[in-house]
Amino acid sequence: MSSRIPEETIEQIRQQTDIVEVISDYVQLKKQGRQYTGLCPFHGEKTPSFSVSQEKQLYHCFGCGAGGNVFSFLMEHEGYSFVDAAKHLANQVNIDLPEIEQRDSSTNTPHKMMIDAHALAAKLYHHVLTLTEEGLTGREYAKVREFTKEQLEHFQIGFAPDRWDSLTIICEKRGFNLDTVAKAGLLGVRDSDQGYYDRFRNRLMFPIWDGQGNVIAFGGRILGSEKPKYMNSSETPIFHKSKTIYALHLARPTIRKENAAILFEGYVDVVAAWGAGIQNGVATLGTALTTEQAKILRRNAETVTICFDSDRAGTEAAFRSASILESAGCHVKVALMPDGLDPDDFIRKFGAERFKTDVIGASLSLMAFKMRFLRKGKNLQDEGERLRYIEEVLVEISTLTRAVERDHYLRQIADEFSLSLDALKQEQFQLFRAKKQKDQQHKQPETRRTTKVLTQKKLLPAYKNAERLLLAHMMRDAEIAEQVQERIGGNFNVDEHHAIVAYLYAYYGEGRESNPSEFVHRLEDPELIGLASELAMLSVNEECSEQEIIDYMQQIESYPKWVEIQQKEIEMKQEHDPVAAAKLKMEIIKMKKQLH
Image (cartoon, rainbow, N blue to C red; front, side):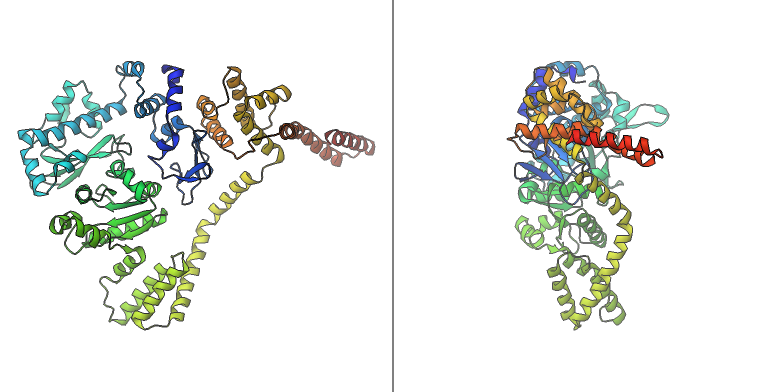
């Protein structure tokens, strides 16, 4: 597929692209020494094992083994083809790909057509709202909600006219396949296949974007009394509610700067908060927070403040969301809304400054919120309900990892209910021990598997470690590769190493200079790409001596002979003829002397 793009153009894109900047759009990276680390976007983890090298323009996860360069990252994370990844990167660094544009124009993929149809729909809806007579109803509603021109522009809010065919006609004129547009969720199909109709009508339209700013869905707010009041696009090949967070690409720069995100329930609250000066607000899409969404938030920020409605449903949703975010490794806070108000209402009633200071600025710690939540609906004057509340709070306290926090909240309970602090600590410890034993029973098989994997990675045989380190040096230095090729050629003992070294010899044989990122780019097998990336990012002695290289090669050469010696030792033990056994013994001694 890469042959469709001139090799020199690919190289130009690769040289002008900074892998750290690209991956930072998906993962919060922190510099540690010469590399950047973060939470891996390819598997769930709480402790960073994902590493990015700006120097080598490579990434590798030491947890799941994913690795490669900037092209493979986009292909694996976004599901791009190589051409799509190249076009995306070329656009970021302002490199024209006219030959690709020309060839792709006649072969528009369904995925691209769905994206393009959403982009067209967003422009149509925004145009209708801001510049046409048909959008008057929407403008009046926006005025009532006190949306400014800046808010409408920033979030590209639009209006779907109260007609059945506005979008349908435009898509047809632009040459879109209407069946594909219908599968994208923008059109409906009439009964008995009698044509198509606009799915969204007479609604204020909020575009929903993917992480890179492509419109992939819409949320529509009805302006009349029809039901449902809010309607999101249905699940499509390009839109998955459980993996999408509203306005993340708009909020990401501020989220990264502050290392914190504000999570709202809906897009109207995000729009209102942005107007109030809060630019790190995002939202779920009318559904409960999912584990996937929590992981995305954690990869972008350490702290997440939940700001949901104050009604019972909103409070319960905040409680559930807090647990999910906490499990994903987030530091969670909860901003409490006054009864009967949502964030949008509060801002319009009391203004931006009070929202920032009295709501967001007064956020509770997660434990303080849980204590408030657990006492709701309980009569603490009743002995039974009071004891039930205390036990529920102790269960939550036992989940806290810091001893100082546990002590703080235990003292609060002791003071409020005139209880013995020692008795509370003893009860809390028993609950903690019971929970720990239960967790260990559930996690024991997984722990054993994890330990086995880590052991395999750490306790490598000498020959295997020598091959890894030698390959790492060979990828950095063409002269070392030439020296190794002359002495041992491709006789590496590990199959994957044998394959990599064959590609490496071919790479240098084309007259290329050492460049780990370019070499990895030329590999096609995902396993080899991951392994080569890991080897390229190994910490090795940059000033490698010739003796060190010779020692590595000797380890590799001697391994098959040690295997042969071990086989002869087994044969000797099984041999019943004393003469034959003695002969084998002499052979073994001779082979060992040669090795030493």
